[in-house]
Length: 544
Image (cartoon, rainbow, N blue to C red; front, top):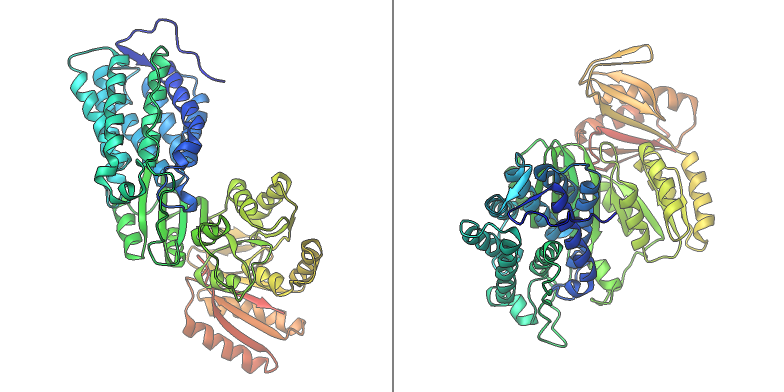
C-alpha cells in the first residue's frame, strides 16, 4: 500500500515513515516517466531501456521497504539499498542501488535525518556510486548526483528545512541534467540529455513532491532532434552480450572483480554491494570467460545473459545477417563455454546461465522464455535443482512452454540431437524426452566436504562419480573414480558410444589416458572427448 506522510511533519527532520512516503512518490513519478526516459537512450540496445531499468530497481527497493515495519530512518534506507541491489537492472539500476547504499551507510545510526544528515548521506551516496563504476564518465547520472550532493552541503548549514534542502537539490540536479550534452559528445550528437541522470532527477522530484505537493513538477528536457541518429554498435556489427547476476559472499573484493572482468574483455562494468551480496553488471563480446570467472566467485543468483545484437535485430534496430543455423524454439540452461558453443551450434539462440551453485530464478527463466521470438517453446533445465523452477515458468508464461526434464548438459545435448524441425514443439518435446531416457550419464566431481553417502565415508577433496543422484564411485583421482563407475555399466549394457565432456576441473591428458584404457578393454566402443568447461566437474560422461 502507498504510505501516508504524517500530518504536519517537522520540517527540520524526517523519519523512516516519511522516507517511505518520499521513496514511494519517487517511484510513482519514475513509473509514469518510463517511456519518456527510455526515449532518451542514445544506444538502442536491450539494456538501454533506462526508464524501465531504474523503475524496476526502485520498485524492488520499495518492496523491501514496504516489508519493514519501522519508523527508523537508517533502517528504512538500509532496506531500500538491499532491495535495490537485488532488483537492480542495467548500469543505471546498479548505480542507483549504490547511491542508496552510500546513503544508508551514513544514515544507519540515525532514527531521524536532519538536513545535515541528509546532505552527508547524499554525499556518501555520490562517492559510493562513483567508486562502483569502472571508468566514471562526466555527463551521466554521476555528474547529476555530485551536483545534488554539493547543493545539499551548501544549504544544510544555513537552512534546517528538509523541504527547502530538497528543493535546492532538485534545482541543482535539473541544471546539471541540462548540461549533460555539453559534457558527453554522444548526447550532444543525439540531441538528448542523459537518460540515467533524467531518472535520478525524477526520483528527487518525486521525493520533494511527497513533502511539498504544492510545488509544480518541472518537465524533463525533451529531445532537441525529431529524428535523432542511431549510433552504430561499438564493434561495428555486434553489441555483444549483457551479463547481470548476484553473487553471495564473493571470494574477491570489488576492485579485484573489476580488474579481472576488464582483463577478460568486459566493458561497461558496474559492481555494487549490499552486505554479503554483490551485483555484477558487465558487457562483453565473448561471455564465456566472463561467466566462467563469475562461477568461481561464489554462489550465483538471478544470472541473466542477453545477446544484445540478436535483440536489436528483433527490435528492428539492426538488419539481421543470414544465419546458417536456424534459431530453434528452445530455451536452455547452460554452464561452461564449451557447452554454450555446442548448444549454439545446434540451434539454441536463447539461454540462461545456470547449473550447480547457479540455479536461475523463475524470473530469469520466464524472461528468457518471453523474450524468445517463437510463440511456443521447449525449455531444457539441464539440472535436477532447476526442474521445479522450469515447471513453474511453464505455468506462468504467456505462451505454451514444454519442459523436457533434462538432468544435466549431456542429456540436453541428446535432446537437441533428437529435435526434428518438421515437427511442432509439442511433438518435439516428446521425441526429446525419449532421447533423454535412452542416455546414461555419469558426473565426475570433487567432494567439497567430509560426508557419509549411504554406507560410504567420503573425505573432502576425494573424487565422486554420480549417476542419477547415486554414488557409483569414490577415488583419489578423477580417472579412477570414472573407471569405477563406467566399468560395471559397460559390462552390463551394450553401449556403442561414450563422450567425455571435460569440465573446469578436468585435464585433457588424463581424459585421453582413460579413453585409451577403456578402448583397450572395450574395442568396439566409439569414444569422443569434448571440452565442456562446465564449472566444478572433472568430466561429464555420456553413454549411448
